[in-house]
Length: 125
Image 1 (tube, rainbow, N blue to C red):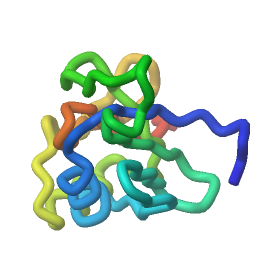
Image 2: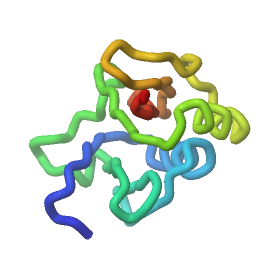
Image 3: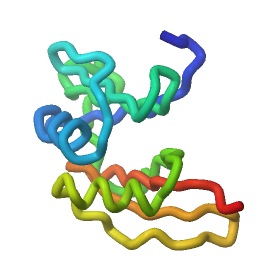
């Protein structure tokens, strides 16, 4: 485990739905799971990770669940087009088709059960 790795932590009451979405539809694997806590990873061991925690586990300063707006997490992938096709074949419903962005990415979005938007992208050559 890399203690310097950055990953968002989302407070949620939807841990079971979140695990199902990430492992069955979005192509992530579970890196840590325990009572009230889930951490998922995309790709290899050094790949991007997201964490989810029940509000009763978060401590007194962080008791309110995420309200489902305003968080986009960019996830690098070898091909946004192929990832889009893979997610659809697993039953996921992307928010958009892959498109070229002016900053040099090709990407598409998909929302998890908490409203977190995953922006799967690859850099355009």
